[in-house]
Image 1 (tube, rainbow over the protein chains, first blue to last red):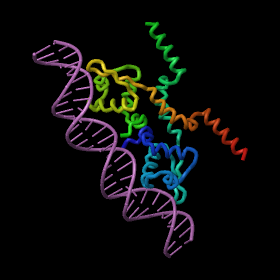
Image 2 (image 1 turned 90 degrees about the horizontal axis):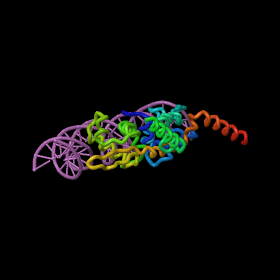
Image 3 (image 1 turned 30 degrees about the horizontal axis):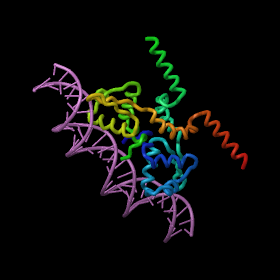
Image 4 (image 1 turned 180 degrees about the horizontal axis):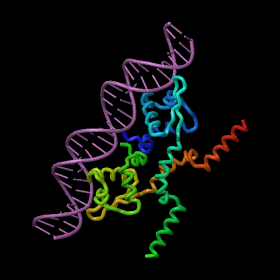
Length: 106
Length: 106
DNA sequence: TTTTTATGTAACCAAAAAGTTACATAATTT
DNA sequence: AAATTATGTAACTTTTTGGTTACATAAAAA
């Protein structure tokens, strides 16, 4: 069972769940009410999200409130950021400069 | 067949392929030589990467040179960036400030 | 205390993913 | 011309994924 952040956000329903929970806590049923798939299906998605640390669950009586832990997405950002030289104009310019300098020194 | 960038980078082999091709072009066999799985398996991964635009293929005789198109990762960065307030200290501070201001005005 | 509600989970299913081996083909080398 | 090389792809297998329905259980409400 791969259970990493990259795999977790590969599914669009899970990305939507995170979006939904970004600024509010909801219990599982309330989350499910936002989707056309069954509650057990949502329950599974939430389990996956919580297993990889993207979501915390706070039990309150019979209810389970879900809270996104979006700080975990930093892992993704860090991975992506190492390539940002490929679209960030400032970094692109810097990169070109460094490449030229490197050639000069040969 | 979902074929989007999120799904493509969910697989760690594909992330490694992108890493390998970030600063060099290699033909398919040369890519495969870096992994323990079979050449056809790599061929499939490369197909997936190219289908979602993360990689370009340049035919040269019987060889196919693979070049990463990492600019495509901006899609991922853009998605992730909307949540960067959850780990970026500057943004965190700004966010806290705005939340307080909002409360004041109530 | 009975009923309703929030939830987990088992059992099942279909489709997709990730790999394999075997074979075909076209371009290069020898 | 024959052999080698780079590659695609078909056929197959196993595992994983994403969903379903049906049932169990504990908490809250009536």
